[in-house]
Image (tube, rainbow, N blue to C red; front, side, top):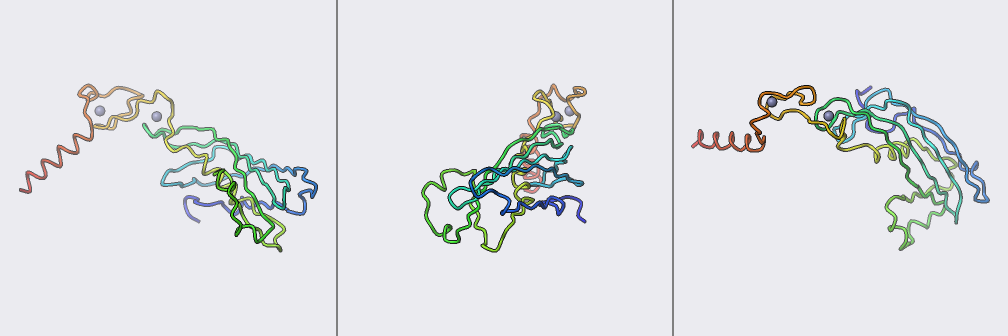
Length: 196
Ligand SMILES: [Zn+2]
Ligand SMILES: [Zn+2]
């Protein structure tokens, strides 16, 4: 068992039974929740689900397709991008998936299809009578994860020189106003001079 999860865990597998979706277009709805016992690793950033993720599914038939809307809500904890203290962030959002029962459809050129980037068309094999929602719930969640979370809008971050948390107390070097990029440049120039 790895320390982190990078894809939908087995416990997230949840079957949407296609014959349960009414033929007359009436929406079929279902809700469930999923939890993660380990941290989620996404692009090197570690997120913890602080409560089970609530999932709402709405599926209906239209023009030979099954339209599935997956809504996800919950909260994650992630290190603040300035001071590294845990920051709690609420997440909420949805994605629409179009499942086609028509094998030929992926070969058709539908000019309207590319227009909406939030939708994804998937072709189902005729023998398939269920859709595994686990990987889709994972995908919806991933799109909602904050990339530069802050513990608060006013977070002062860490001193680039001594590493002190400027939220708890100012450090002595804060008045010198050192730009860390110039510090790196200075040390590079020094190395150059030493080598020549
Ligand atoms: Zn912070
Ligand atoms: Zn400092």
